[in-house]
Image 1 (cartoon, rainbow, N blue to C red):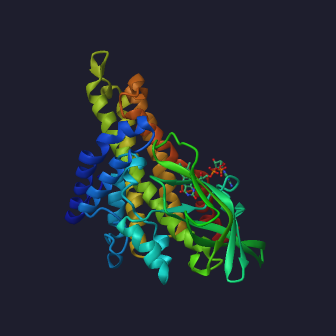
Image 2: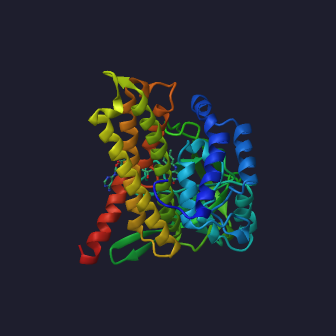
Image 3: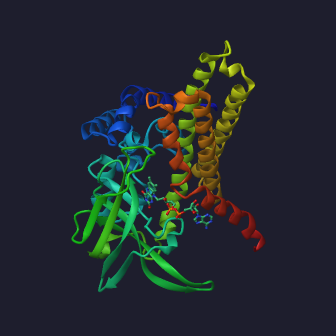
Amino acid sequence: MNIALSHENEMLRDTVRSFFENEVIPHEALVDTLGEVPEELGLNIVAKAKELGLYAMNQPERFGGGGLNHTQMAIVEREFGRTSHALHSWIARPTDLLLACEGDQVETYLLPCITGEKRELFALTEPEAGSDAMGMKTTAKPDGSDWIMNGSKHFISAPTMADFAIVFAVTGVDETKRGPRKRITAFLVDRDMPGVTFREGNKCVSNRGYKTYELVFDKVRLGPGQVLGEEGRGFELAGKWLGMGRIWVGATCCGKAERMMELATDWAANRKQFGKPIGTFQATGFRLADMLIGLRTADLLVMDAVRRADAGEMLDQDAAMVKVYCSEMLNKVADDTVQIFGGMGLMEELPVQRLWRDSRIERIWDGTSEIQRHIITRSILRPLGA
Ligand SMILES: Cc1cc2nc3c(=O)[nH]c(=O)nc-3n(C[C@H](O)[C@H](O)[C@H](O)COP(=O)(O)OP(=O)(O)OC[C@H]3O[C@@H](n4cnc5c(N)ncnc54)[C@H](O)[C@@H]3O)c2cc1C
């Protein structure tokens, strides 16, 4: 890593790195070619990750999780980012939203996700409501003490078929000073409930083998026990997760950028043209210098944000800055790495083209760069009443 770590955190980083180098990264090319992770391989990674205590590391120890703090999770996510999401996401880091589980929900949803008996989906996006999440059309209408859900979600991603989804739906409309505002509620929806369909959706060229699913809800009856958190407070709940999710995106971007830079450096030092290593041409050497500046800045931004998070002081704009800077830094590093490799950078025989493709999604999911800039702009102008 670019920045100093404590001895304990260095050991954590080295454990994850050696596990990934020996057990995960060697399978990347196969997974990319197949367009999926063979189940046996996925389960094998899960079993070995559990042996090392790397499964559900983000969750509190009192529930059986690894109990890592945000700083340690950033170190781990950075190592995960060195390889494809298709592979590392088998090692679950269950969403913190599940910590809102109460009563029976803890036994039914939270704990099985930590032990690995169940997997969850985070289902916000709809075909007509991407960046504009408030535009969602999925509804859950009250029916006595129950709710009837209708609608659909898409681009809901996971390494393999999940058991249930945290689904955001409109449960009413509030009149506010700024006009009517949809009430959004989060529900725990099982895949095998009557009227629920989970099916594989579009195939993404970033992280081939990491699946997206379409979810359809046709008159699904949900009891009061299926509401996660408070009715009408779904966005506040989602916001908690989205913020940290953006930090993890930033950390994974740093890991992937570091790996690409290692490849680019090695190539620049060894590939000769005009009788010299191409790295000695200023055009190539300066690309490496800019990569290092970008990577170190990105690492520092992530570390600053997780320190704020550990202190309970992280703001939406902190997470937005991490997301936009790290993902754009990675895409610059990825493009420059291809350029340094020349034609070989685009050949299937080398990992460069795959890492370049895998990098592209980072500017889109978890809120696009444009949406992050909106969040940052709002934080600048709102205090001035603009
Ligand atoms: C592989 C993959 C996995 C995903 N996993 C999940 C998941 O698990 N759960 C989930 O809920 N969602 C998931 N998503 C959805 C993801 O969060 C959305 O794709 C993303 O938020 C953008 O929405 P969109 O694709 O509909 O693009 P759009 O919202 O249609 O945006 C298209 C373009 O318009 C721009 N734009 C839109 N509005 C504005 C504006 N106001 N100002 C400036 N520019 C704007 C965008 O920045 C973008 O460049 C996933 C997506 C992908 C591709």
